[in-house]
Length: 386
Ligand code: SF4
Ligand code: SF4
Image (cartoon, rainbow, N blue to C red; front, side):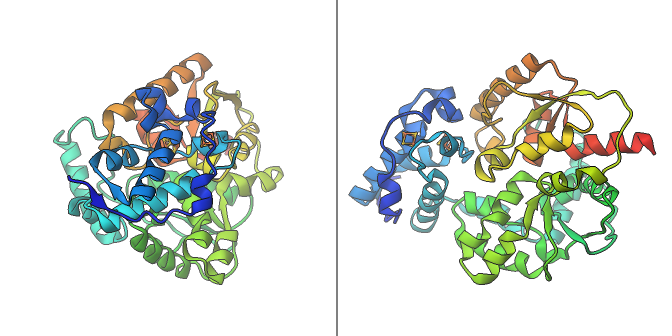
């Protein structure tokens, strides 16, 4: 691709806020793997400044922007409070609008996520191909169910957000979460199909208009004032950012109702039944979108500590390399990043790992790690008592 004219339109104060100290570099998974300055947060910001000043970008610029996992580990490490996530989202949206950054086939794939009927049909086809061993081994898919049993609401005290791919491929996690929340003594309500997708992957891909459409549809699917619990860190982060995305009174009110399910449970711990089983030694993998974006990873440990011996990994919350669709587009980098996480898990000497994000669960499983959602582990321990 030749150089093309682009106006990124990043907030000038945001762009100027980086003082190039480099303290974020050890926290950036793509820099640690490549050791390339342009694959670091500081290098990417320098490239954004150049592009903004010259009004031009080339394919190399697009490649360095696209190869960012958007883990936002750089944000929590940055002493200057640089809002890297919002700068990257603005950059990608400008690229998607003004350059061939997102090819048609990626746009079609993202569009499918908002249509549960098509997603269900596609998932069934994948399940059949999977049973015949016809899927490429590099695709890190769980065993996709051939037949889905519907989720059944038990009341209307709290909502449980179900999402798109997670609901199509990992519905049993929702069922385990429902049982744990019900064990507190409240009824759980599931949304209609209008809440099929939160739009996180669309936002990350720079498809802002599609993300905003999905956000409006999702908000309409959760009437009332009941809290909305989320058992996927990536979806929870996106739903909490609807206020920033749409900037309407409804969207700000909606975002206030969003809780990662562990955040909500931590205020109801005394109502949860105990377990007399031996507490297993469980390593906690903090999903980036819980630790660096929602900044709310402590409740996972607090909930788990009632049932297991929780072990904090020694990698300071470094990304596992999953990154939504990242592991499909950049398998080599993604796997190299995962190797560091697997090393940390090995040093922790745990029986199993807990991760509150379905993408991380699938990516770590594909690397041979025994890992489940934290509340699947809690559900098993509670049910052993029943
Ligand atoms: S993003 Fe923050 S930590 Fe990284 S170089 Fe800039 S000011 Fe320093
Ligand atoms: S978001 Fe993650 S991958 Fe991207 S620059 Fe920041 S630390 Fe690196």
